Amino acid sequence: MQKLFKLMSSVLIAALLLFDIAVPAARAQMVGTEALLSATAAEENRARVAAFLDREDVRQAMVQQGVDLDEARQRVASLSDRELAPMAQALEQLPAGGDGVGAVIGAAVLIFLVLLITDILGFTNVFNFVRPAR
Image 1 (tube, rainbow, N blue to C red):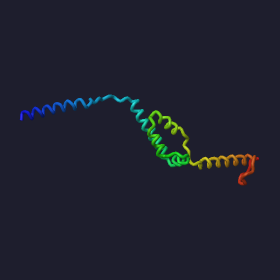
Image 2: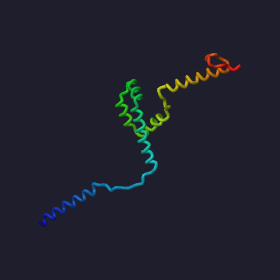
Image 3: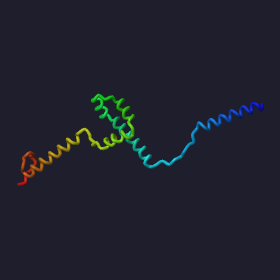
Image 4: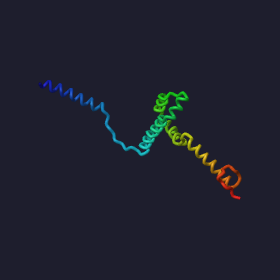
């Protein structure tokens, strides 16, 4: 029995020494504000570009150009944070557009107003309901 205890204690001592060497000590450090903000900004940039790629009009344009959507997503996922930042910033600066209906309506209203004012001033005779000022 004494031999069994000696053998078990030797094995336990060796195991504890090996486990102590294999596991590194944990360190607690303060996280700087810049590091936290850059990590958050990188995640936001990645999400912004991914959301842009998920839009239906972007997908249709990419298919028309012959770009494989899965390959484009893989390439964006493989970009570093530094490479992704200018892309996300460019997406942020793009004009927000629609299908052009608002521009057409705005142009029609502008033309109507110009013709109406010129009719009122007596330069043109486009609208019958306008009595020119003399």
